Amino acid sequence: MSARSAPDRAPLYQLLRRLLRLVLGIFFRQIEVVGEEHVPAEGPLILAGNHPNSLIDPGLLVAVTERPVRFAAKDVLFRSALLRPVLTAAGAVPLARRSDHGEGPLDNNAAFDTLTAALDAGGAMGIFPEGCSHDDAHLHQLKTGAARIALAFVAQTGRRPTILPVGLNYVHRKRFRSRVLVQYGAPVPVDDALVEQAKTDSRAAARELTDRLEHGLRALTINAPDWQTVRVLDAVRRLYQPPHISLEARIELGRRFTSVYETVKDAPEILDLYKRIEDWLDRLDALGLRDRDLARRISVLELGARAVGHAALLFFWLPLALAGGILHAPIGLAIRFAGPLITPRKDVLATTKLMLGFVTMPLVAAGFVGVAWWWGGLGWALCAAVMMPVSGLATLRVLERGAALRRLLDTTWRVAGFRKEITALREERRSLEAAVLRIVERFKPAGMVSLFPRDASPEPRP
Image (cartoon, rainbow, N blue to C red; front, top):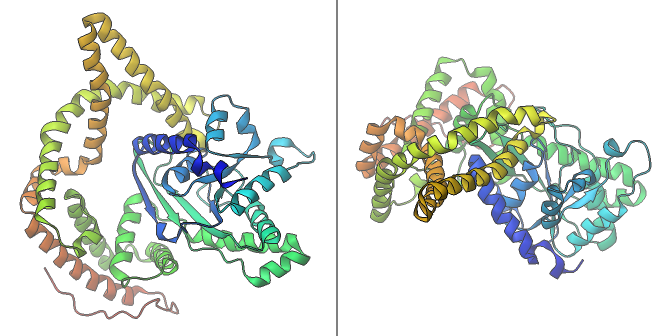
């Protein structure tokens, strides 16, 4: 396959990517992406992800990965008249699975050759080594397809692809306006010993590489009980870690905090620290800030922009959202209740809801515009055509800033005194960092070696 025919040169792929970004940006309240710095800008790349959410998983990777990605997709999906053009636009390659075709012989040589050619042209491919989407909370045993493609590529070209595990962690994967965390993990090594082993025993080499990939994926799996706990523990990790640590160390640190937390979460000191960090994060959210913003200088222009943004939320978006709720709530409720009734499996429920919304919302909008035209003429129809998307956008904006609206007076006061609040947040961060260091030393399991030598100095109080 020539570089010119690769998906990055296809306008259809770029159009699909923009459409996915729009649709997924509406469906999810937040799409958080970490580890992007570990994705190479060029060269052969294999993205191997877990597969908890059916067709949303590849769509999400296409939307957030800056490089064009070709996917291996089960061939039965290409039978769908609705999905076939989407899969073709995405450059998907049909792959036959034993579970879909019974015990007869399977021939995936053409698919493997296509994916290998894409890698040879310096492209990126995506694959879900679990083999199929599922509704379980844990990672399934991986198939060897990704490893076989990587080793075949090495054998044919002498080059070694970058293999990145990608963790997809959905807060509530079946719900509209939920959150998702995309984590690009550390590269899985294809070392000299493995390449030599593949020359004499390709099956064993593929299994060994698959085991390495599985280890990398498990390290990216978030096992906390809920999103709020994930949010707080991630803040603990940031407060504890020194600056400029490697991605591998950051992932390992997060995994340690998550695993140990379950054993110490009821200790009074832990409960107190949890509440302090939770309040600190809420104060950051109310101002639309992140932890890393505290380390930089906040300009006067940005201060003014945030004040204007909060005023717009109160006096522009909120009134529009009231109308938007009346217009769009019946559609949302209908999709919520109809989705489970027409979904064949639990793991495709979110995909079903997304597809229903993608099809239903434009049809309802067109119907609303048509009724306005029939009732009041062209002028009313144009107003309706503008009102439907704008009111929908307003509803989403208000839902996203719901916490700020619930704390309306407090948030307004904090925005008005932005500089003073920034100073207080920075002081509280220093205090929390000292508290985290001391508590880690106290509750660290016996025998666990610290990743970093940290000085638990006395805690300054704000």
